[in-house]
Length: 130
Image (cartoon, rainbow, N blue to C red):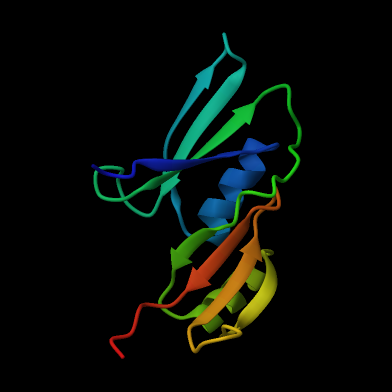
């Protein structure tokens, strides 16, 4: 078995694609319009879908925004340096909502950023062997 993708519904597809590609460094893997259903699917990731799990952005043409549910937590992305990633994301106009630093009850360095639709993204450094 393999996890293929995680899907998020977005209000403005181009704004979201720009955030995930230009701010978080993903690339657009594929995109398809479905006029009969009035929606577009865009798949993004850091590598080809045969190698990595993708992020599916679903844009329903007649919906500009969604209410944030209470069950969803966050997406997690590993970065080489959490502090530098926060600087880079801020410089590109991204919103860092929890600056890089150790977690409250441990030593793991993490940060949180928010995407254009309000979804939280956790940034984590590589796992250490200690």
